[in-house]
Length: 203
Image 1 (tube, rainbow, N blue to C red):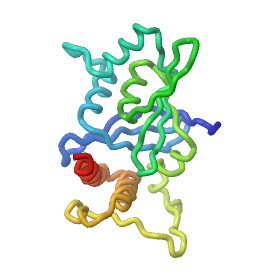
Image 2 (image 1 turned 30 degrees about the vertical axis):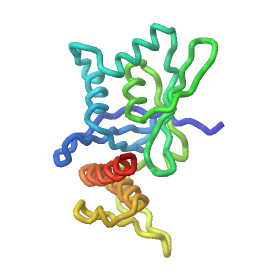
Image 3 (image 1 turned 90 degrees about the horizontal axis):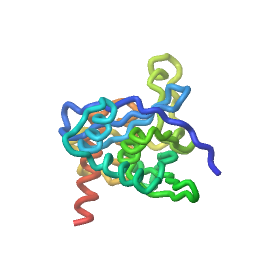
């Protein structure tokens, strides 16, 4: 079984340009390595309400889910953040009734919203740490920025006006590059273009 790495929720950054788009920031325990995950407004609201202990007039979706789990004596043991082949983050919910354990697929943002309500730990894999995390302190230290290997393909980060000409694979790589550079506004714009294409495919 692959090793798991504990993640801590740092917070949510708000996009001042792209309305309704946010970045969820997770950090590997004991390190400075961070994983940004682009999420939407409902998920950001659900996470923030719990972090700020805001009491809503009626329970939110994740509160209802937790109440249902509690009624059936099912506990959320932990969340495992994973990455799909298309670069999108997802998560496994590891649930237990005390006798057996089940794994339920979920969006990463929903999984985090449930984890903070259940006081359940959040983990990820070594592959995700290697591929999607960055250390914000490294780029402030001279000489630590790795040089690209000879003939390595360049990741092209373009502004919104040129996103339509990129493939989904190029958009995913550009979003990852923007996130690692902490350019969350650009990452959010790219994510919006990716979501738009996925919605067009589903319609």
